[in-house]
Length: 106
Image (cartoon, rainbow, N blue to C red):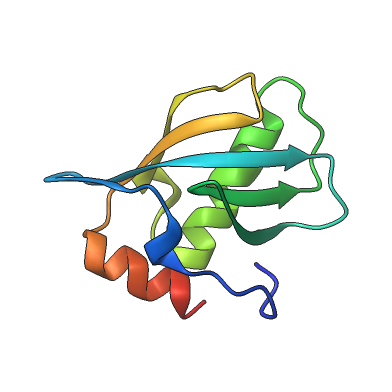
Protein backbone atom coordinates (compact mmCIF):
# COMPACT_ATOMS: atom_id res chain seq x y z
CA UNK A 1 0.00 0.00 0.00
CA UNK A 2 1.08 3.64 0.16
CA UNK A 3 3.73 5.03 2.46
CA UNK A 4 1.88 5.98 5.66
CA UNK A 5 4.41 8.75 6.34
CA UNK A 6 3.66 10.46 3.01
CA UNK A 7 1.19 13.26 3.60
CA UNK A 8 -1.49 13.23 0.96
CA UNK A 9 -3.53 16.38 0.79
CA UNK A 10 -6.46 15.62 -1.53
CA UNK A 11 -7.25 19.34 -1.79
CA UNK A 12 -3.96 19.75 -3.74
CA UNK A 13 -5.14 17.38 -6.48
CA UNK A 14 -6.65 18.71 -9.70
CA UNK A 15 -9.87 16.69 -9.49
CA UNK A 16 -12.66 16.82 -12.03
CA UNK A 17 -15.89 15.70 -10.43
CA UNK A 18 -18.68 14.00 -12.38
CA UNK A 19 -21.71 11.81 -11.80
CA UNK A 20 -19.54 8.75 -12.42
CA UNK A 21 -16.87 9.69 -9.85
CA UNK A 22 -13.64 11.65 -10.15
CA UNK A 23 -11.01 12.17 -12.82
CA UNK A 24 -7.46 13.04 -11.92
CA UNK A 25 -3.91 13.02 -13.23
CA UNK A 26 -1.25 10.55 -12.15
CA UNK A 27 2.52 10.70 -12.38
CA UNK A 28 3.71 7.07 -12.33
CA UNK A 29 7.18 5.71 -11.66
CA UNK A 30 7.21 2.16 -13.02
CA UNK A 31 10.04 -0.11 -11.92
CA UNK A 32 10.29 1.73 -8.59
CA UNK A 33 11.54 0.39 -5.28
CA UNK A 34 8.06 -0.14 -3.83
CA UNK A 35 4.36 0.05 -4.54
CA UNK A 36 3.27 3.30 -2.94
CA UNK A 37 1.41 6.55 -3.24
CA UNK A 38 4.21 9.07 -2.87
CA UNK A 39 2.35 12.38 -2.67
CA UNK A 40 1.03 15.15 -4.85
CA UNK A 41 3.06 17.14 -7.37
CA UNK A 42 1.65 19.92 -9.56
CA UNK A 43 -1.89 18.69 -9.00
CA UNK A 44 -1.12 15.08 -9.95
CA UNK A 45 -1.02 12.06 -7.64
CA UNK A 46 2.50 10.57 -7.61
CA UNK A 47 2.51 6.77 -7.60
CA UNK A 48 5.33 4.22 -7.66
CA UNK A 49 5.02 0.56 -8.65
CA UNK A 50 7.73 -2.10 -8.72
CA UNK A 51 6.44 -3.61 -11.96
CA UNK A 52 8.33 -2.77 -15.15
CA UNK A 53 6.50 -0.76 -17.81
CA UNK A 54 6.02 -3.57 -20.30
CA UNK A 55 2.86 -4.88 -21.96
CA UNK A 56 0.56 -2.96 -19.59
CA UNK A 57 1.83 -4.70 -16.44
CA UNK A 58 2.67 -1.45 -14.67
CA UNK A 59 -0.77 -0.06 -15.50
CA UNK A 60 -2.38 -3.12 -13.91
CA UNK A 61 -0.20 -2.63 -10.83
CA UNK A 62 -1.23 1.04 -10.60
CA UNK A 63 -4.90 0.10 -10.84
CA UNK A 64 -4.48 -2.59 -8.18
CA UNK A 65 -2.63 -0.20 -5.84
CA UNK A 66 -5.29 2.50 -6.16
CA UNK A 67 -8.16 0.04 -5.79
CA UNK A 68 -6.60 -1.52 -2.69
CA UNK A 69 -5.82 1.89 -1.16
CA UNK A 70 -9.34 3.19 -1.76
CA UNK A 71 -11.12 -0.05 -0.84
CA UNK A 72 -12.84 -0.43 -4.21
CA UNK A 73 -12.78 -3.10 -6.93
CA UNK A 74 -10.13 -2.73 -9.64
CA UNK A 75 -12.94 -2.42 -12.18
CA UNK A 76 -13.77 0.98 -10.60
CA UNK A 77 -10.41 2.42 -11.74
CA UNK A 78 -9.93 3.21 -15.43
CA UNK A 79 -6.96 4.69 -17.27
CA UNK A 80 -8.40 7.23 -19.71
CA UNK A 81 -5.18 8.40 -21.36
CA UNK A 82 -1.44 7.95 -21.13
CA UNK A 83 -1.40 4.16 -20.96
CA UNK A 84 2.13 4.10 -22.42
CA UNK A 85 3.42 7.20 -20.58
CA UNK A 86 4.27 8.13 -17.00
CA UNK A 87 1.65 10.91 -17.04
CA UNK A 88 -1.84 9.44 -17.04
CA UNK A 89 -5.43 10.56 -16.69
CA UNK A 90 -7.70 8.20 -14.74
CA UNK A 91 -11.31 7.90 -13.66
CA UNK A 92 -12.25 6.45 -10.30
CA UNK A 93 -15.86 5.42 -9.76
CA UNK A 94 -16.14 6.84 -6.26
CA UNK A 95 -18.00 9.90 -5.01
CA UNK A 96 -15.59 12.86 -4.69
CA UNK A 97 -16.01 13.34 -0.92
CA UNK A 98 -15.51 9.62 -0.28
CA UNK A 99 -12.46 9.60 -2.57
CA UNK A 100 -10.86 12.48 -0.65
CA UNK A 101 -11.67 10.88 2.72
CA UNK A 102 -10.24 7.46 1.80
CA UNK A 103 -7.13 8.91 0.19
CA UNK A 104 -6.38 11.14 3.17
CA UNK A 105 -7.04 8.33 5.66
CA UNK A 106 -5.15 5.55 3.89
